[in-house]
Length: 394
Image 1 (tube, rainbow, N blue to C red):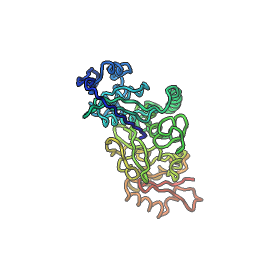
Image 2: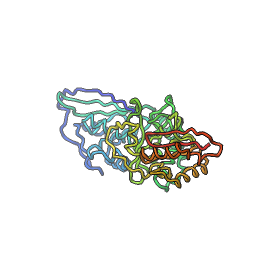
Image 3: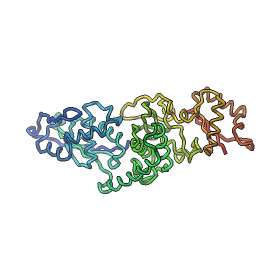
């Protein structure tokens, strides 16, 4: 996750300015306790910038349902909400409720991981006020990357993109259909480009149509959440320790991984799928074990296991083989031809089934039973990691 943190230290020699008393107000998430010893003026500054019970209650309702917020320890939710309110209000420096820099960093990561609509900051600065032996208060300053007047303009562009996106989907449909539609929409309307502007946030996709992995992942998160799907930004590595970002979604009560970047053939030079405008469905709703064949999860907080295959793309589309099923094979090729696709993809439940299907179709030449009569040879693709064949139909 793109993030910059700057630290400053301010020494406080006058011990009389430090109070050990706690300010306390009541909210829906419990009592707000300010650990720092703030003066009456400093407390007033917090109130003036919107850190009050009313706004914390409103922010609590807004943030419920987001993965990182829901899984925070109760005492860190107040800190999360203060950071969220400050950034959403484009506020400047304020004294935060915590005097623990590690907690502040964790809460900031959670806010940014939950809220792709925050596209105008990539970090923060904090100043520790210390006595000889302890921190007594911390001043927090968001690091804004875009002037406020441009933020307002870009938010209108985002709204226009969102509205166009929503016209193509029935918001009362099932979770899988919403997720698949969002996946396809982003891939069809985005080109992978390492030189794209604003490529660590949603502007790269929604305004410029060109992005890298974090832009894809945040755009998917933003749009799927508009459809009521809980979507989470996940970070880690692929290949030779190349930083990467993707998503975890909750589909019909089960968690799955999704990688829109790897679904775009403009990223994958040897895309498996040639059938629908260069969309590769191999990484649409996959398990943890499947993901870890090619990805390394290096997230800042633990994630739940993704074990279900019920809403995997290949399972839902009738392209998942647990054995040599000739009726299923007939239907797979027939449906692909009926839909006008250029290829058909078949996923196997195990390496054993994968080898048997390959033997039946390729070694025994039964693949030509499904090809046009003038075909004498065939080039095909394989994803051996996920036990998938891709056969051209033209």
